Length: 462
Image (tube, rainbow, N blue to C red; front, top):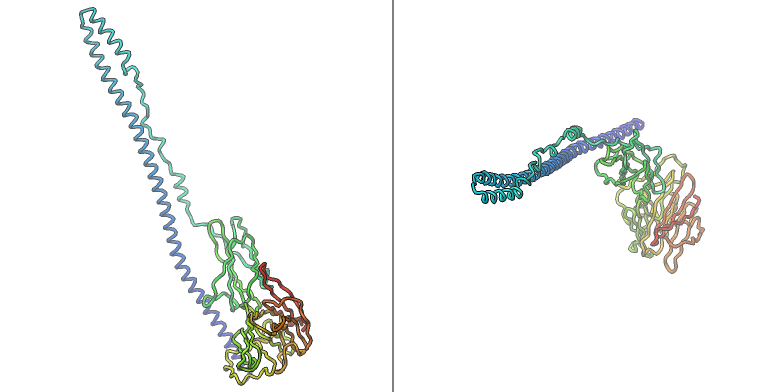
């Protein structure tokens, strides 16, 4: 009966996962269909604008050429009209002189005839008809303004859509996720010497497999990448996975996206387990603060930051190490709300709260940030067997960093009731790196200065 139940549960889980996968694919198809419609409409509008621009240019060129032809016509017409007017005047004067000369032939008196002959000679010498060029100043040819658009027509007939680069291929084997950085490597399916640069897009997600459409963050864009590899540094691993995609661009257009790749960040994301906290602690998600109404003590606050859950202690199971690659989370969503008076996981002076995630294997990192008015706190790890009266660092099953800002600042590492003072400035943030399989706990201290951040490290064996 139990084995059948377990088998049925596995079938139910498999069906639920498959349904979720199909629904995500349906959402993707719907989004793609919507994108096709929107992009087609945009491309058609752009095509209309491009052709309207061509028409506008052709109209401008045509108008300019028409003006040139009209100006040339006006220039030649003016030259010919001027020459024609000069010829008409010269002809009129010449005809008058000819008539006068013809009449002079009938003069009988020698003296008058001589006088008339001298006048005719002088007038002929000065006559414009004999100084007039009988060659047109301009020709009637307009061939220098003729056009031949055969080449342009051939160019127009070869108009086609832009050559688009093919989609790159991301190589997951060459990608590296480490130290709050991700290196993404890709290659082109075939050589393309016209590629100018690449665009890398990424986003954080808590879902494995293909990128989801609904309820996801926006894509972040890294533009103008010249190589086929890029490292994103200074990331905040506040999600389990990251989606990546890349596209190639030539001088004119961007190509298709690569198939998206999902990389695991191995981020340890946890909240604080309110039901495990001391009565004097007020706990909410990743924040814990002193609550004097629950008992006596000083007021202090500790707050988680970035991709790191915050707590006084994160629990470790004290049994055989498993090969599970990620920590197991105890479900707190189904847990009934904790009644304040019933919290008895820690009592006395063990002002402690546990995280809701138990680490069984692997390497995990988180950070804790204390508010400026915090007077005293400890950050560390412990086995789940930590007693209800035990304080962090005072047993052989717990390790912690302790900060005391009361009268003077003290900063120390504690384990098994032994204290090692740390000769560094009390940091802004404390990073905890737990290498469960290696049996080590690393502490990283971040101090902020104008020039940037300074990092110090300390190691404890588990």
